[in-house]
Amino acid sequence: LYGLVFASGVGTIFHFSLLSVFGLLVSSLWLSPVWAGAGNTLAYGALEREKLDIYAPAQASDWPVMLYVHGGGWKMGDKKRVGSKAKAFNQAGYVFVATNYPLLPDHPVEQQAHSVAKAVTWMASNIAASGGDPAQIHIMGHSAGAHLVGLVATDHRYFHAVGGDPALVKSVISVDGAAFNIPWRMKSLQDAGWFARRLFSQAFGRDPKRWAALSPFHHLEAGKPLPPFLFLTAEQRTASNNAADGFIEKLHRVGGRAFLRAIADRNHATINRKMGEAGDPAFQAILDFVR
Image (tube, rainbow, N blue to C red):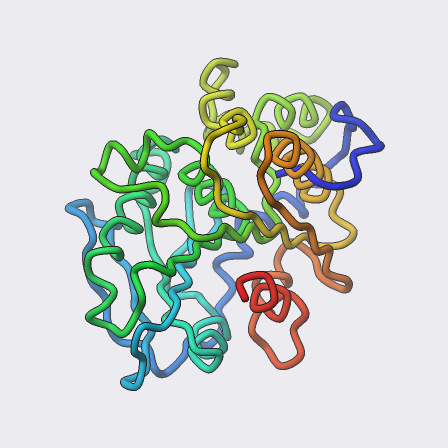
């Protein structure tokens, strides 16, 4: 969640316009084409939104698995809107899985993380039937989804609660996430518009102890087994780059591995929407990182 260059300091204050924060919410809802090879929607839990879509060609056999967790401010978004990702990952030799999870206001962030851990655990037992290798599960999230995959990979209680093993996660890819250190994020939003403050207060409340508990940053500890992280950020977006910088700096201090790739000519929405299109540098960065 933070990065390699932290010269500006944790206390950096940045501003969001109403339009830019609204874009954070709706970017995952962009109506983009779905890979025609899709088909298999399965339930991984009992809740209405505990369902996932598996994209796997018939020839898939022991392929690595890429799980995608959508964004939407913890309150909206849908697994169907994957754009070019599913086709691109299939063509690169990956089984691609897109998952839903329960949303605010009926289900708090803790439940959302619980569901993501449950989805990974379900895949470990079931993905082989679709040609995936359960020993090669990589998890990727955009925006709020980036926070959720980071949280389950660093706070192992979520996997333990569902009978899963944190070691199931071989790597984590954050796509323009900024919510890795919630106390820092709340401070940075003090001078922001009401929409941004309301978004984060709805998700994380007002209790600093809860903020820390829901911060992947605060679960980084020396000696704890942690997967490698890749942070893909929109080059000019201060929030995601500062967040990546701080997380990476701490992860390196505790002996972990993390990498940052700032993508030019992308914003918070297009870094996600264009992923997998011809010549997309973010997609190529993921393939290089996983390999």
